[in-house]
Length: 211
Image (tube, rainbow, N blue to C red; front, top):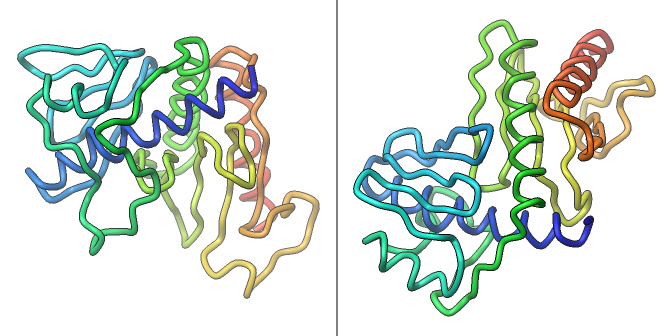
């Protein structure tokens, strides 16, 4: 299952960056996305990923097959936001074949949505955003970032994080601070959404108490 989650996470990251954030930025000037229990969505353009389907107001298409054909079916211009916004992290060529593992995708969606819920619960004015650059959902408070990443090359599976601004130049002491950027909490991807949310919220609160 680990391999399927990693492979699917990489594809979903590319989809978020090239099929939603890129078109949305070109149309509206924002890259901000939002999490859903079953996927993710644009915040300023009505484009959604639900399960293994790309949905827009007038139709939908399975997220399967060459990326260029998926984009053509939806009328979207395939591609990330421009480099002046950020350096693209997950290139998606037209000939790249999308082949999502739905169970793995649902695992990733569950972790990201739980992360967004925990951010909204713990931060006094939490407004979680799914950022396409790193495919993580989070917000900040008092110069500290709180969120959940779907995974990356250093930590391949989903994890929660707390990252004080300026860390490690201004490091903290204590067992919670276990990562180069601050604090990292591996997520039990087999748990249900409620349990994952509770665990993430407890981790955020613990880190807050150690700041």
